[in-house]
Image 1: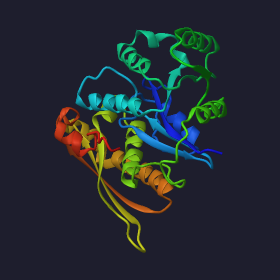
Image 2: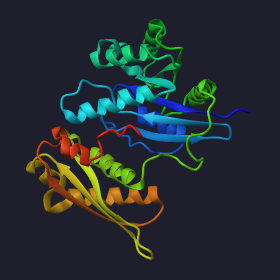
Image 3: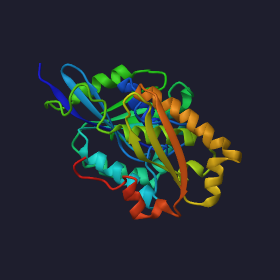
Length: 302
């Protein structure tokens, strides 16, 4: 049997469930997931390897009209991941009905997709919530004729994911595997540790705070006979945000540290000592120097 391998780019609006879908298909939690939109900022690569095929999933940020430089970088991940794709999965939240047609940022991505001679699948997600909206969404995507296949799914309830996976394998190009079978991603442990902390920021803090934060792992030491040492810095844009992150008498940052440490230890499979600090960097979301420091400058070799 010939080996198949290829890149499957998952695209969609914010909060469509792209990260939940990739995690479900992989059977591993690689991408962070929260109830808030715009959680994913970079593309996250997840690798599913079986005997005769390898699917490299690219989880991408939700498509939006950029308002500052960070969001421009996020959309660069989207367009580059689209260019890298062997197959495109467009993920749509069934509860949004036909609103996708009203979004200019999404219309632009659809125009880019139209020029790609590769298989394109529309997955209508969250079909277990509202049947009428689900029917409307499925009809809309079937009528657009932009996609070779429309598959109704529930990523969180694992509905029709085997059907989706079979379609992906069927349409993968014949190609040797790109990565060793044991690899789950091309990212290092520092990346996933920073993402776990950022996920907990989204869960613990309200309003603008999570969107104004970035997490950098400034030191990570594996210590023989001792807990790993991790020094994480949370960057915020204003002094008032630093006060909210820390909380009264340090209560909030302590809670953040406890939740993050538990998640990191579960992910790494070993104990860690986690030290979290906070710094103010005004307007970092629009500062090219800091965006590069945080790893948002796209590398062609990635």
